[in-house]
Length: 289
Image (tube, rainbow, N blue to C red):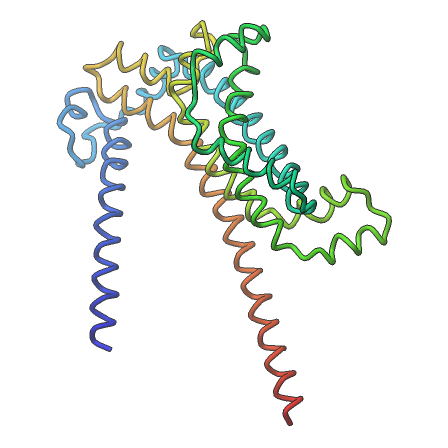
């Protein structure tokens, strides 16, 4: 008993230290964004002597944050939505049609998880398709990079969905598309929430792909503006911190929003499983009696 408590306390202490290692730099960044340049350069967790909320206005006016924010939202929204939609539909086909061809297709798609991304051939392909420097080029690249992982997640979950639901839907006259969108896709909400968090964080924070495939700064995303802004205001850490806070805030909001959806779905599922187990035990007890 004492050994179990010591193990639990040691684990909690380790998690507390790990949490502080993450939270301290975040607090340093947020507080530094509201300080004067001299106070921000001290890199301390002290509260500012004077709250400089105008740092954020300066960043928006001189850093091109408004345009970059719009670009990031467009790319992340379409990249995430199309990746989730295509991956879920592909996974539904692979999971429900057990054949040699679907198995080969599944393995072929999963190879994308280990295959490296080649920049030069991709640039040449986008030039041939006349998509170089457009939103579509970057969105298609993100879909191609992330579809393998998404198919892997969705396929495993769809295979756990009972086929009796499909048979009942066919009896009621549902076709494959209506079956997917009306029955299977609603069951995927916890997996979709998890995948949306991962994809949004990946696409939103991506730096190299927009740098390679956007020819002008008019289509730069937020990570590129952070890089450019740091080059212009390297000595003014209060403005750099403000830029980082603006860049990170949307992804934090998405994370907590989708995590709450996942938590609610998980709680409901856990309660249903607990109720089902209780009922089965009661029925077994009644049979024995």
